[in-house]
Length: 254
Image (cartoon, rainbow, N blue to C red):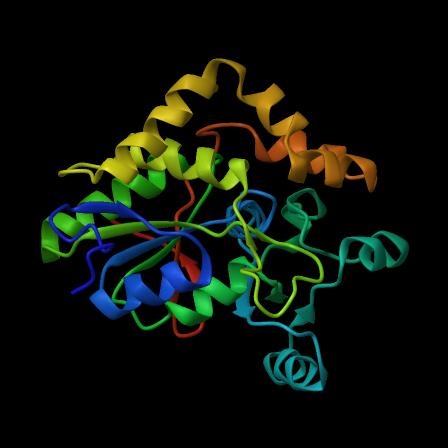
């Protein structure tokens, strides 16, 4: 047992891929939060009844063969997708026309964390769009099983970190998304979880501005994807709760 594992509490928060590994090791109910944009994209895709198969990076021949085997479209980078009219790690590229279609989604942060924590009994995808709904699902599983809950804000990665540097860059949009979920979780909350919830409660009256002006929001806006930022900042507008089953996400049914 690690002194850092928040083990005396039922609701915890851990960052990134290492945090996903710790949650998986404990067998916690796990909620992956990557607001801009893995989580928001998965939630939106399931809302229009598309199928999403997560896959860890890099995008190479192996993942292309996996998508081909599934009869799925391999989602492209935003820039490539915009040129080709395809789907990308952008929630606004999905519509009702995608019902029943299959997609393979490869991403550095969200998909990597999912892959690491994939063996837990319940792995959910959460964001601002479905914060209350995913918390309700996690509460139900916790009541049924007695398992604890860990929320994983994925964060971003610094470009070109040196060998002796940690590549994780905490991202406030993921922290605020995690806080919105934690606010609705039942059971005792670690100090770390309480502070994360407090950050959301402080920011929620001005949430659009905070995420619009944060580093990740500015990056997407400068690349021409302001619509993604605006869309992903809405709170509790979708009731979809993606849960990982047989290597794909399905909508959780109570």
